[in-house]
Length: 143
Image (cartoon, rainbow, N blue to C red; front, side, top):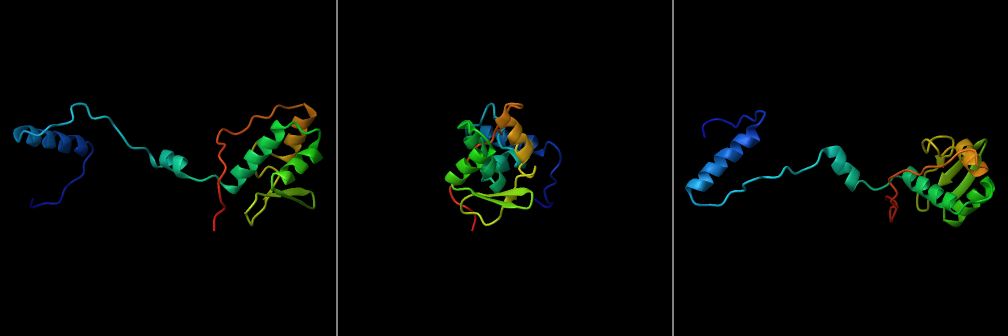
């Protein structure tokens, strides 16, 4: 080749066709119906990413709510039994998953449905809690 390869839209298909004709001429097998493969970066990252600190806390809150505590203090006690550190600073309740050094406030920072007011409404029976779909717990914290 005396020029560099120009990657144009559909060049993969053109190179595949050229490769198939060379293989047929030389008696090699070809893939008749190639299936598309590969994922977009977002899908790949979603499969590979470990759950974040907030995701772990959401999972712990979901597990505690499944045990149907009587009141909000009972929920905080269940979270403490699971290994979550619960502290209060001013008006905000702060949670820290086991093995992590940073805290997350329970004032809407955990996402929709996980603020203190919303969880109190769930425990009072005024609202229904729907857990997040991604429910995986990381085995060890980052270093």
